[in-house]
Amino acid sequence: MTPTDSAAVELTGLSKSFPSRAGAVRAVKGIDLTIRRGEIVAFLGPNGAGKTTTLDLVLGLTSPTSGDVRVLGRSPREAVRAGQVSAVLQTGGLLRDLSVRETVQMIASTYAVHAPVDDVVRRAGLTPIEKRRVSKCSGGEQQRLRFALALLPDPDLLILDEPTAGMDVQSRRAFWDAMKVEADAGRTVLFATHYLEEADAFAGRIVLVADGEIVADGPTDEIRARALGRRVSARVPSERLPDAVAHLRVMAIVHDVAVEQNRLTVESSDSDAVARELLTSWGAHDLEITSGSLESAFIALTRSDTEGAVA
Ligand SMILES: Nc1ncnc2c1ncn2[C@@H]1O[C@H](COP(=O)(O)OP(=O)(O)OP(=O)(O)O)[C@@H](O)[C@H]1O
Image: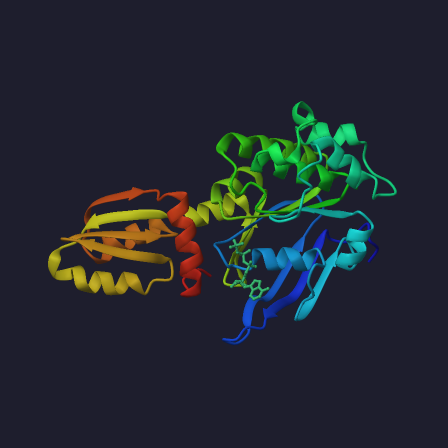
């Protein structure tokens, strides 16, 4: 396979453990993932899921304990050295006494070939503040500066690790608007986030990770539908309630069952099947179906997979 027809990112059986006094921490546990060129992929998961460790492996900042990483058909280091990949990371020192523009100029001077300074300053939305000292820039402005630096080598693949952490809603929107333009120009974008809303708004595909493993992977619409599931609530005759609860709790499509007096509330990925079951087998009446919130659904999806409820 040549570098031009290969995938943007290819992870095969990727694992990473860190030694610790309490035994090895298995941060990434055998991930297989292929990201095609031009995709916008959200790596979505709670704290400690292994997102940063995986992105560090893709960037060649750390080596796998086992498994393999290919980036645009090359090793991560080769791809980074060739300017094909760049990153906006959570950390990454900026010199406080330089202006925004001076920072971009300084980093540009380290590349043999780079995009024009004016151009990347504009694309990152920094033109109005290009003379401002870095020390006077807000956290969101500093992130946009890191984004401008990432654009300098004209990369095919952009890696972003929680790029909008700590930004207010307005800065977050401005950041993603700028990123959208880059994605529309055909760059592959892989970003880590805690926020389901952010993944939903920007990514074409969501890879949901929890505890070092991929628990769901698919087009954003599909993951949203699966994550959202629905809540079915109904009254069940009190003498049948205990058996109905026990039966529902072992159904694979059921994430949670709550009982209040003789009303059952069931969180499920297949509300139709639950409604049918309640009506036909348990004499349910007064049945309602509602959508849960995105956040509660995300928590249910990452948690329920560990319990084996999500296929
Ligand atoms: N250098 C290290 N040494 C020991 N343990 C580590 C190291 N780096 C990460 N870990 C552990 O590996 C696990 C995964 O961490 P990682 O930072 O990849 O998760 P994450 O999904 O990016 O989390 P967050 O959203 O909080 O940044 C965590 O349990 C973390 O404590």
